[in-house]
Length: 203
Image (cartoon, rainbow, N blue to C red; front, side):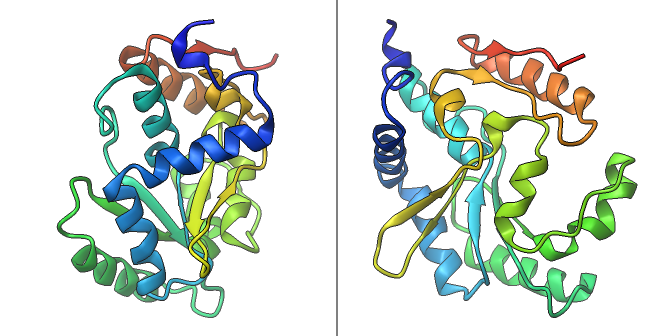
């Protein structure tokens, strides 16, 4: 087995431990996790490329920020679904995270169903918590997020598990008709991480 696949066939518990150790090794990741709490965001999660791309970089010996354009931070505020309320949070976070090496993109998951049809041409169910959106990602492999709990532990949220991520396997999620998004993102990723195996969208 090649070295970058050393966590591909271990237990789910070992994979989760490996992921938390990798996240703790990255100062910018820890700064974001701590910042989400200090900013008082409700139900905050750091997810997507900031997590799985970091893992792929560390396991293949690349620089930790290779291929990472930004860090996706989400929160859930169902009490105020206005754009203005979300924008106020975005601006506050932008100032707080200004010194990080990558920009931090912040979104209220309670508002996703309002803009999703216009952006993607299909409806998305109204979410009830931040982690729900991962159920509808085009790719199961990308559905992984983390938060720093009050006791200092990092909790991992991965509805489809971590096996695909550690196997460098990009697996589609047909919950929505995201075939094009899956293949486009997978093709772009493979240019950076040729180790990836791309699973085709099911017929």
